[in-house]
Image (tube, rainbow, N blue to C red; front, side):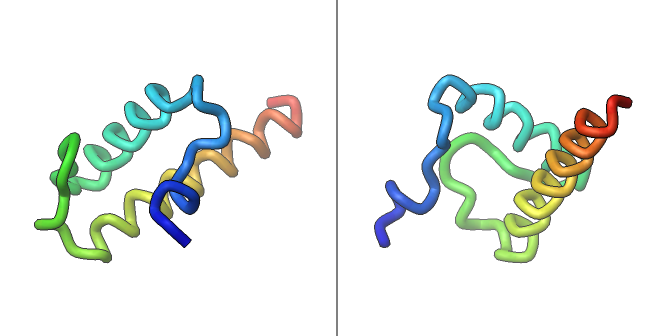
Length: 68
């Protein structure tokens, strides 16, 4: 599987918002993420950003579904 197929955004119009969300989450976690190359970060740091993004998206969806 190539990078272009496994890391694509399903709704291309959301790319800018997802990038902004990723940077906000990285800032919250204290991960020094930058635009572009981040090979200097550990897989743990990068994974924590992605994992926390998923957690926050699930929480937002649950709130929406519960009507809160």
